[in-house]
Structure formats: C-alpha cells, structure tokens
Image 1: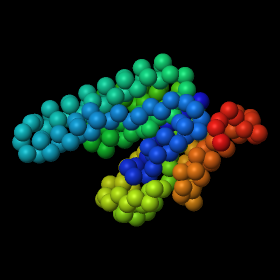
Image 2 (image 1 turned 180 degrees about the vertical axis):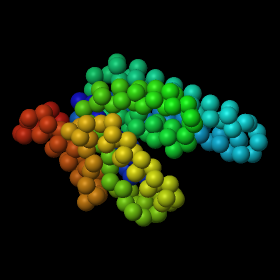
Image 3 (image 1 turned 30 degrees about the horizontal axis):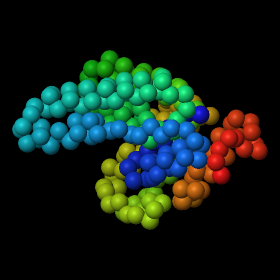
Image 4 (image 1 turned 90 degrees about the vertical axis):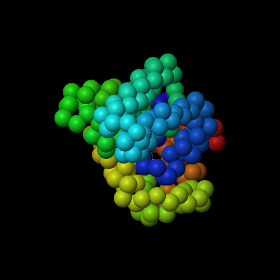
Length: 205
C-alpha cells in the first residue's frame, strides 16, 4: 500500500501521515524538504543583492530536481509506505515561482517526472482546508499565516492533483473530519473498500 499526503501548510499532513503509517504498519517517508526550503529562502538574499536572481532561481530548480530524483529512488526501493508530502508539493512550488519562465521544456520535464512518481501511488490524500487565517489543527494548536498564501497553496495543490492523479486514486477528505482518528478511519475505510475487503485489511485497531 502506497499512500501520499499533500496539501497546504498547517492542515495536519504530518500528523495524519504518522498516524496512518502506524495504523497500517508501513514505513513513514518524511517530507525531507530542508534543502528545498533553504533554496527558496535564498529569495531574500536575491532581494538584498547578495546573489543574482538568476542564481537564486537555478538553486531552486536544482533543489526541486534533486528532491524528485531522491524520492524516485526511495519509491523504487520501498514497496509499501505512507509519505508526508509528495511530488505535487514540489510541482506546486515550481509553478508558484515560475522557475523555468519561458523555458517550457524544463517545466514539461518536471511535470512528466511528477506524473511518473504519482503513477506508482495507490492513494493521494489531501486533508481539508479551514478558511481562517488562524488555523487550528487537530492538536488544538494554532498556526498563524497569510490566508491568501495558504489558500493559494491548497488550491494549486488540489488542481495539480486533479490533473495528474486519476479520480479513483485521489481522496479529498471532507471538512467535517476534524480529529486524526476520524481522518485515519476514513482513509482506512476507503482503502478497505478499494481492496475489496469490507471486513477489514491487515491493519492495527
């Protein structure tokens, strides 16, 4: 079973991924976005004149490609897993920052690689987005951020998923599912139904 969790920041992706990994007894693949985030943060250095804009964009492109290649290696070696974030998150950043500009060949190459990675997944799960700038997650913690940025991120993520992932493998969790347990139960129920085992699959209660 191969499941990926994606979506905007602060909607409970990591918590859900960890809980599903434990419930299904499969390895958890962490997001491992450190290099990508660091590269995109170089935008501040570019704005301050420390490095050129072209150099900053190239650093972002290289970080995105390395992440995708690394994730490809992991997915080829690991038969079952739950992963926190997936290729969609990288493509979302690539498109948001228009990394290749008029070089459509670069963007097309990244899209095709993302399609390839997504094609090996059984499910892509997107937790619900709460329309409030102060986001309270399932642990009752509040994360403050720009609503416009978060909403843009979720909208683009959902759009990419709907374009690149077959409907039968895309699971948009209903907004009414607030707790981790509710979300885990919902996903497991869909997995059971898809596998044709209404009585349950080999998961821990």
